[in-house]
Length: 124
Image 1: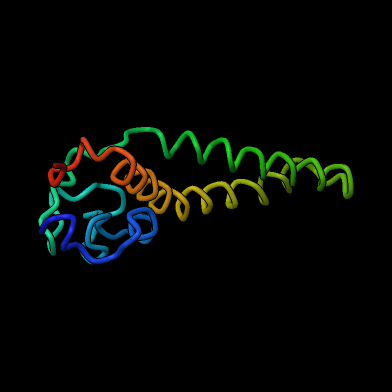
Image 2: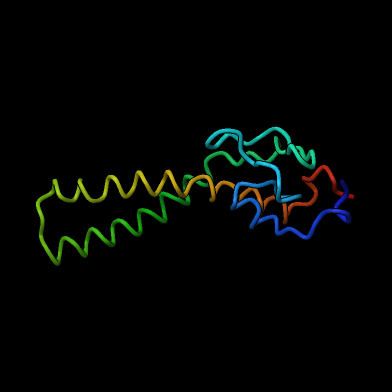
C-alpha cells in the first residue's frame, strides 16, 4: 500500500486510539504496551517506532502537576491526616498512569510517523 492509496487517516488520531498510523485499522500494540512488529492490515513495519521512556516522562509531569495541585487544595481546605492523602492520591496516580500510558505512547508514535517521513518504509 503506497501513501497515495492510503485512506485519509490522521496518524495521530489513529495512534491515540491504538491503531496503525498508516491505515487506522490494524492494532498498534500487542498486549498492553508492546508495539506490534507489523500492522496486520497494511503491513507497516512498526518495529522502528519504539519510543522508550518518553510517554512515562510526560505522564509523570502531567500527573505530578495535577496531583500536587489537588493535594495542596485539599490540604488547605480540609487539613486531613496524611493517611487520607495516601488514600486519595495513590489510586489516582496509579489509575492515571494505567489509563494514560497507552494513548500517550500511541500518540507519540503517530507524531513520529507523521512528522518523520524519512523513517517510514513507504517514504519516497
